[in-house]
Length: 294
Image 1: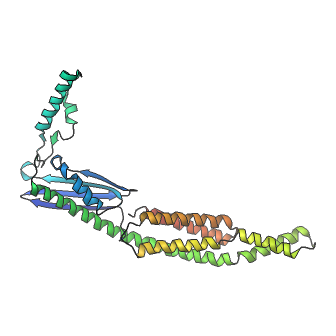
Image 2: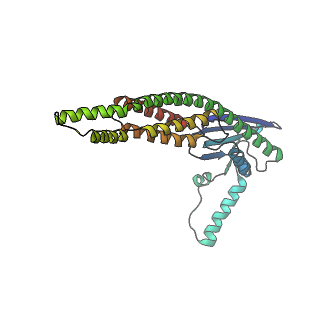
Image 3: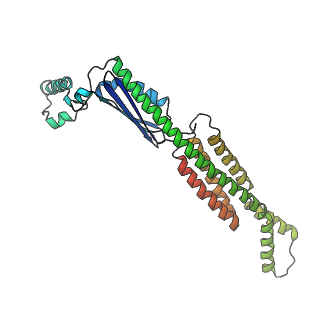
């Protein structure tokens, strides 16, 4: 399936009156970059959550967080006494055993991660708590995935429409490119006639020069490659193989951009240059859209 890298999802599970509320959101990124936010007592679940994300998503910056809401302490922010005792003991050891000078102040202590227990945080979550928080996060991930699929379908439709327009431009380029050799001979003959003022011209040499000029301006190979790249891009979008398509499409669009630039530089024909410029403009728009695809 074609998936966008932007989306949002929520998940909520209640266990014994405790609600686990998860949120997942994602934006564009070259790789999979997970920003995970878990309550302190649930940090041991990080590995399982990361595996769940990697099993569903391949690219994008993903922010996944969960809030534990317990009715009895929704506004309760408490000091982590066990962590504070450990911190004070470490400070004492540094002073007495290692001669490190200095005292802990309130501001420093409050900056220590986990020193404050957030509402709903518990030192020892049991199996039901762990199962609840995992279920909520997976629900949020699944909702995020559905959102990315919906957005991906819309992007694919838009890109396919633009690729179709680019294919039409390539067909028009093909028609104009067919008359380039004949026009090159006419222009060369006319120019030589003006310069030589009726002198006898070696027809064989003239034909040779015309052939060289036509060869330098021939864009047949570039047009063949353009049609091939456009066809591959359309197939990736209309016949997805289940793998992410963003990077593959970006590579194809880079190749299309290169071939278009070559056509524009090789031809002095106004009609060809105009269509090559239009093709490049459409290609830039497609590349911009592709940056949103996984």
